Image (cartoon, rainbow, N blue to C red; front, side):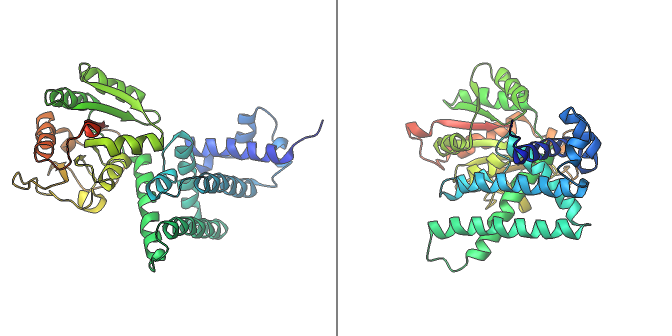
Amino acid sequence: MTVDHNARRQRIAEVTAEVIAREGLEAATIRRISAELGGPTKIITYYFSDKQELLRFTWEHMARQYYEKVSRGPANIIDSLLAMTTADEKSILRWRVYVAFWDRATRDSEFAEIQRSHMDKSLQLIGDIVRILDPTRTDVERISLLLNALVQGISLQSLVDPKRWPAERYGRVARALAADGVRAIVNYGPGEENLASEAEAASAGTAVMMKCSITELIALTRRAKLFVGGDTGPMHLAAALQVPVVAIFGPTDPARTGPYPPSDPMNDPTNCGARSIVLRNPASPTTHARVAMPDEGMLEISVDEVVSAARRLLAHGTRSATPGNATEGAHG
């Protein structure tokens, strides 16, 4: 029987990536990976001389998967950029591995060089998309750097952000807005089924939970007349698509992370043209530290405040109320 050694190396890399994503880089020892594969250490050492070589191959294998995925993506800037983010379970795993290797690159010159090469190729991919959309642009390098920073920001925040407004409250918002004829959809991502179910239950039948692919999420958001949610990738997508947004913030600073532009930063009720309203309690500290519990300041933001903000945006006609725009996107 012919042995596919390349397939075996890739399988070892995939198991290594899974361990790194769950427990960090230091947990990915040869002994641990071989145990995960259910065999002796020689199934690793036959292909890799040491842990350094195993880690290097793992990173390069993950990068190849990333480039293949992005290269197959559409020549549409939003769809393509979302394909680079933590848009599905496999992408979340890949980004956890990237972050672990970024830390290693700060202390290891070999990995620092791999990281620079990876960054250059990512910028080239984004630049190619920009050139397809607008061949006359002369600032492709600058735009590519900005778009890459957006991809990284969305992805990193989705990995570490525990700052959620309670799911049950989203359901109560949906129930209140149903009285205004708004149909709410609770979109959820990998591992968020229980949160979405909690929101749906609290809506008393007025909201429907829905798990979307990237393309479906974009299509759904484009048809929405309002988005309600926290500082997440879908919120930034809605803002980019010019859907009115009620953004619920905790410790992260909306002046830094958006939605851009912060058209109603002071929540001025006379600002009838606002496309976004940011709700943030002054008691919330400005920090990106990972914490176990929701921010207490965020918990002070009431359902009534969110409903009031939503009704202001709906009432002032920031988006035409056609039959195709009859959905509120409520995201936890």
